[in-house]
Image 1: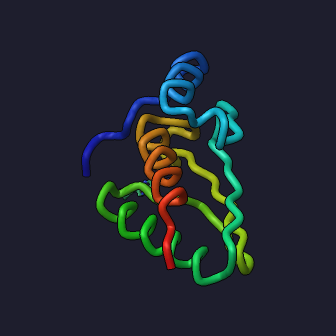
Image 2: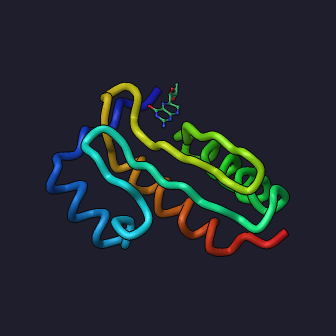
Length: 104
Ligand code: H2B
């Protein structure tokens, strides 16, 4: 197993999230990134989740999420370090891109 990514400092998180416009879509705390996404229906929500799941497997970093019908609530953090690493920033950016392009 590769070694754990580094815990990002508060100001690194701020800088990186602004660079990638994550600050407009994610609620950011030192512990986690949080976003809710509402789709038009369940089919779109699940299509989104399927694409994120495949990407998550590829990067070995996974969302903590829940889904009720067309709503998906997502928490990102890095368990081993109890906070936010560059992997969370990377996954958040991918999630925003996938969400923007969901087609059923
Ligand atoms: N996903 C997230 N979000 N945080 C982690 O710390 C994490 C993960 N760790 N996916 C990975 C898998 C680890 O458990 C495996 C063993 O690599």
